[in-house]
Amino acid sequence: MKRRLGRLAGTHGAVVGLLGAGGLALGLLAPIQGAAVAGAATTTSALPGVCRGTPGAPGVLAGTHPAGEMVEGACTVNGGPALVRGNLTLAPGAVLLAAFGLDDHTHGGHSSLTVTGNLLVERGATLLLGCKVVHGGAGFPCLDDPNPKHPTLTSSGHIGGSLLATQPFAVVVHNSTIGGSIRESGGGGGLRCVPAGPFLAQKVPVYSDYEDSTIGGNVDVSGLASCWLGFVRDHVHGTVSFVADQLADPDAIEINSNAIGGNLVCHGNSRVWDSAEKIQNKPYPRIPAPNTVSGTREGQCVLASPPTPGGKPGPGAF
Image (cartoon, rainbow, N blue to C red):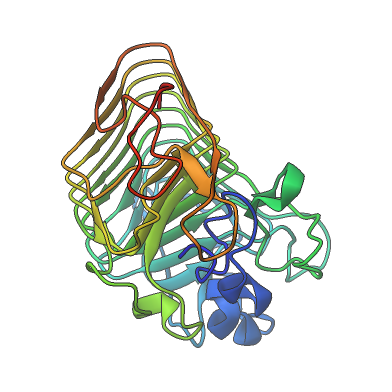
């Protein structure tokens, strides 16, 4: 299924639908060129600022925001580096696209997002943070890469605190550093693989994904109901937990090639995999991608996922 996600889920090479046409941002990019960069200058207000926009005319989060920031409606981070001191909050239903490699307004320099506090994703909100393609073509090309088939741009996210998502619509993170923990509880696009919300224009099913990132604390994803969920090539200092996540795609949850300092805990999920399909859109045959776990493995993530249809787990560790 992640192939139909335009390989946003990039685990082993090809989510093309979203990215081939500019990705989630296609409906947003066209009007951005003439949009004003909201909050680009440093301000001295003690109150949190607000980045506000619509899908047709998104706001642009750039510059330094010394007292926190709220995203309402639709905003992008493509006007150079954005620094939020304190917390950054995505209001209910908001969309923040922070996966642009360049400053698309000045046409000089690069874009990135740094938050010194927590990044809070509220009910129904969508976050897209960071972009990078790694060796072999896996990962996530930046939305403004001039050649998404052979991408070279990168953009990173830096969160000093934790990433806390409560009933979000979707959370997609690549090439980012989170100093604290990640917690995604509930939410998603529902137990079906149909386009909806910000994914609708590109006909892409709703999903959540964490790839090629470093997390200083724990990771806890629970109660998610969506199409696909991935956790791939991440370095986690603490414990990783997937509990009661229900995904419509049989090729989820993919938990592949991670380095986990604590425990790996999986209970009550629809399915888990420590492997990737070898042929696009076919669940078998699979390519093993086991995890390195310093602590214990529990529940569904003890033995390697079956390499053949109807096969038994193992014999290796998940």
